[in-house]
Length: 565
Image (cartoon, rainbow, N blue to C red; front, top):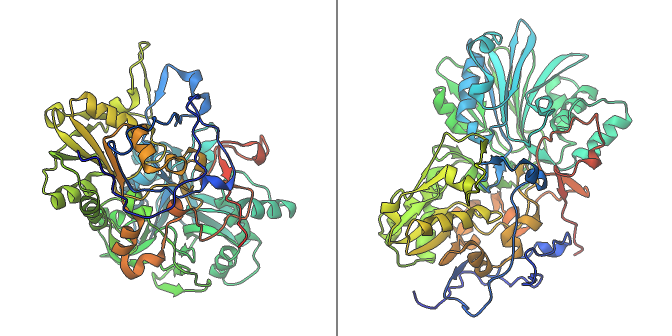
């Protein structure tokens, strides 16, 4: 390879980066300096070969994992995790069963718990459980959910004995009846709202920010019912796409910024369907009609009439760009754009702006496949399956006493030696978070006989945590926040590394680019967290009864401090 480095974006270097080669781990800082921009989008191994390899080690495991050496957590994707997916169906005699199928289609948005609430004879009935949709529901449980309207929820969260309490949908009774809610997103003023409600006598049963919404609705004195929801939402800050169910109504609400997706469709019998993604509509044969607009409240009454009210103040739209990079399924249409087409184009951009001589293009399955197809087509190089993913590995696996290096990755990904041996390989992935898994994948491919390994990442470097419904590590754990591209390349061990330039990403989005949120790439937040610490995950395992929320360490991360202009 030529000894050159292409600078695709003239971003400033990271002056706060300091690595001490005499230690295995750098000291971590919680100061604002951690949110610095990386200085390059592209780096090759021939660049600055005289530099020493930075000494840096980040563990993606929980600190207590050492106590469980015999059980290995194979969920080591090292990716941001979408918090959850929601579904709402009104006017179909098999509402709960259709809801069950729609949740199957949204399973990628959350695998830790699932639930459905249905209305029958003016009574809200609930089935929730921990695990996959297929593990929570069976024929007998669905028989307990008759009725022509239902809402459903799948969630991701940390594990814990009290986690079942936080599995949605939540149902609460108040003086005018009962209400169920399923929520996708995260409220950045949750602690403040909860403290105010508790001061006024409210009692909480979970530590979920969603429960705050139910309390705000219950104490509202406005009429009619949907105005209670509007009044409650006016007090919320952050991201929320929610569906509410009462004895005779289904309500869908999306926050004024439109952070998280929510779409509406209709079945041939006239039943109205709301879902986080269009892939859920496809499975239950509902025709996509449109998005729920940011700031919009949609009310479906007992006659099946849909009433639209944009009663919340309109903000500048800030839709999550990671829905197109990683979260959503390729066959979905999100924010009015095809996810497949977006990812394919990301790959084409990488091939154009960060080309490299190679023999084969492969993907890190499954999220990198479409971008890899685009890269291969643009570069004129064959795309092949160089890594085969096992879809049958559970959450934990018993590791043999004789340690196997990169055990978790090898359980999930198997290299195809015939594709890789002696080849110059381009590996396309959607993102790099901590860098731990990427380094293992590079090593796996090289051990399979690859001559060169060139990583191409179909997103800009991630330097900031998300506070709007995505589980991301704290900024101190994000490798691109602490290293420039060349240092990341050395850490993961690839021969070259290139990220999707953020300017090229915005150029692709055209006039719509200003409608997307890029906080994880820039550290600039559309809604600044107002609290010292902000919940990282939408729901946390503690139930709020056996300990103070301040004592929970793992579920809260440092909020960015406002900087004076």
